[in-house]
Amino acid sequence: MFIVKYIKEVWSAIKSLLIGMRRTGYYFTHHKEIITQQYPDNRDTLNLPERFKGEVVMPHDEKNEHRCTGCTACELACPNGTIKVITKFDISPEGKKKKAIDKLVYHLELCTMCNLCVIACPSDAIVMAQTFEHSVFDRSKLTKILNNPGSKIMDGVE
Amino acid sequence: MFEVYDLSFMWSLSNITQTINSWLNQTFSPTWALIFEMVIVGICVISLFAILGLVLVLMERKVSAWMQIRLGPNRVGPKGMLQSFADTLKLLVKEGLTPNGADKFLFNLAPFIAMIVAMLLMAPIAFARDFKMWDMNIGVLYVTAVSSISVISILMAGWASNNKYSLMGAMRSGAQIVSYELSAGLAILSIVVLTGSLNLNDIIQSQANGWWIFKGHIPVLISFVIFIIAVTAETNRAPFDLAEAESELTAGFHTEYSGMKFALFFLAEYVNVFIVCAIGATLFLGGWMPFHIGNWQGFNHIMDYIPSSIWFFGKTFFLIFLIMWFRWTFPRLRIDQLLNLEWKYLLPISMFNIILVTAMAILGWHF
Image (cartoon, rainbow over all chains, first blue to last red; front, side, top):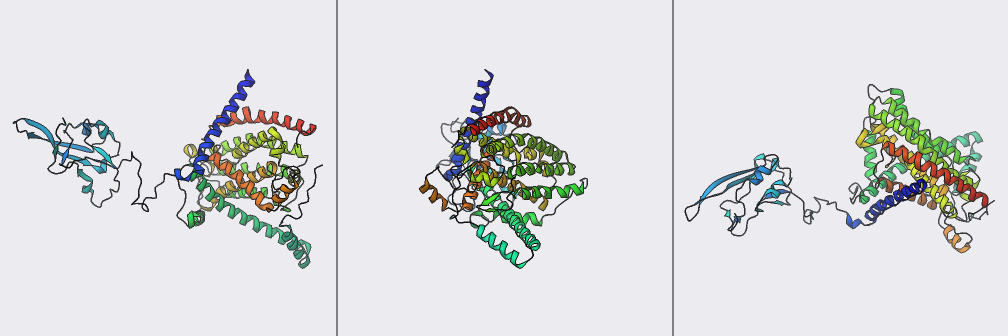
């Protein structure tokens, strides 16, 4: 029946509009939902969301060991050449040659925080940190080496 | 026809106006007294415009911020109260540029037409008990007629700018206002049918024993909803802001305007919102009439102690808030959806609705 369909259409339109208005009305009356951070004022109590991406870092444990195998998956995944992996060959106690990283160079000035390198990493060696105050007066300070000096690969990470 | 309530004990501004009137008539000849009264009214209207512009812009920004889980302006003055002052100051000192290819006369005239239409619409509105500029017996007709002039200013601005976006926005706006005026008119007509008068004062008096939105059952509720939708479209506000759709037409008809000429368009939009909400409040929510329930004398007396201007502005700002709520909730319609909504839904429904209202009025089924 045409008229029944027409009335149903009008009714469902009104209902869906009211659902939308209920949502915005909820936000209007509940100010604790506000997500704006008044940044320079609340620098000490800043509450960043869990998935905020500030820069790429490589976590090290207390023995100065990281999880990077030097597989260059992150370098290949990066869309704008931000990461450069420089590898070397370690000699193990048994006399075998083993590939390891010498330097993992990270150009923060080129990075778009797309998170693709972190996704590509097979051994979870790099993560996104929440630090974001990156401005410096010298451009060369933005080129960072992610592995600490003298660090080596963690046991059991292949 | 309707019971007349004795509201004379209500606090009223009419004493002040009468004192000024008699003093002027004693001091000057009647002609000069009339001229002075006109000047006073003009100053009052212009200052009301300025205050409305400042208050409504700030209100809109705060409402939109809270609805989008943001904070909104909170730096200029206490809690950001002076933000709109700062914006006005910025607009005042900006250069009012006229493009080379534009039709200079029409380009500069258009913002003033928009303002003048908004000013004219103020005339029949009752701001409080016995407090209005012009007690006209065809107030409703006057409002519907004058409000359609506003499309001329938009078409003029769009044409004179000599810019594709502006012209497109103006044409869309023309189509929109011509369509939505019909259903707005029919919605207003349903109250005229129930009251039997085009005088806004009579309409307010007829709501002394309950506002029409409560007395008129579902048909008046339907015409109230249709009225709100249609006036949102007529004032070119989201979700019907096709005339200035930012993502499609940069800014529509006021793309080429800057400085104070842009500010006049901006102000005219907000004043128009205020006026249509004031008309809506007058027709459906009883204007300055306090909230009365039938013959409950005690309850009605308590309500009468709240001044009538507070009732009027309270209702008007409630409706303005409703329209802002629409703006920050709904996405913009496409032009075909916009015309479908009017011609396939609002107009048939309001035509059917007015038959219901007429039957109700004849048979006396309202309270």
